[in-house]
Amino acid sequence: MLITIVTPSLNRHDYIRNALESLAGQEIDKVEHIIVDGGSTDGTIDMVRRDYPKTTLIVEQDRNLYDAINKGLRAASGDVIGLLNTDDQLLPGALAAVRDGFARHPLADSVCGGCEVRPAGSPLSTPASAVFNSPAMKALRPQDVMSGLILLNGRFFRRQLFNRVGLFDAEFPILADRDFLARCLLSGLRTAVIEPVVYAYGAHAGSLTFSDQINPHCLHEAVRLARHRLAAATTPEEHAFYKRWHGWAVGYELLSLRGTPAASGRMAELTRDAFAKAPGWPMEFLNHLAWHMRTRGERS
Image (cartoon, rainbow, N blue to C red; front, side):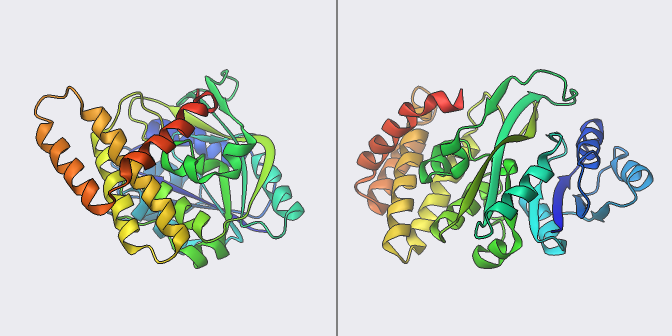
C-alpha cells in the first residue's frame, strides 16, 4: 500500500521542517510526499530541494489553499492519501496505524485517528494543549460537518473516494474541507475509526484551523455554501442535510452580528433571503443549536 501525503505550502520556512521531519520519522516504506508551493520567497523551496530531495515539489501559483491541495491530489500515486499542513506534525507511528486500519477494514473509504493541538514549532515532547479522540467525532456525524470539529488531517482516504465525490471545491476557500466531507457523507462514506492519536495541529496566530476569533468571512461563506448546495440538492437526504446546515449558518451569523455597528443592513438582507430560500430555517437552527450545545464538551 502506497500512502501519499500532500502538503500545501507558502512561506512557512519557520515551521515546515518539523512537518517534514515528522514524516521522515514514520517507520514504514512506500510513502510518497508531494509539496505544492505557491511561490515561497522565504527560502522554503531551496531548503526542500536541498534537504529533502525525495520529496516531489510542485512550484506554481495557485488560487488558494484548496487549489494547491487539488494539484497535489491530481499528482498523487498513492492508494491512500492524507494531508499534512506545514505547521503541523504526524505523530510517531501514525502511518503504520493508518495502514493497519485499512488492512483491518478493507471496505472502508477512510481511516480516522485522533488529533491533538500544541504550539506550532514546538517539539512533540511538548505537552498537548488539547486532545480530540472521541470515537463519535472520528466516525464523523453530519452535525460535525456543520459546526463541530472535522479532524480533516486525522483522516486518510482511499484515492477511489476522490474519484467518486470529486476534489475540494476551490470556490469555497475557507470551508472547502467541510464541503468535501459533506459530499463524502452523502455519498455513503465508510470510516474506520482507529484508537491512536495520529496528528498534531500546530496552533499559532496565523493558523487557519485554530483561532479564538470569529471570522466574518467564514460565517458569510457558510451561508453561501449551504444555499448553493441546497439549491442543487437532488435527493431527500441532500435536501435535509443542506437545509439544516443553511439554518445553522444563518442563525449563527445573525447571532454574531448582534450589537455590531453598521450590521443592520446585513442582518436584514440575511433574514429576508433566508426566509425566501428556506422558510423553516429558525427551527433548523434551534434543532442544531441543541446538538451543538449538548456536544460542546467534545470540543473543549
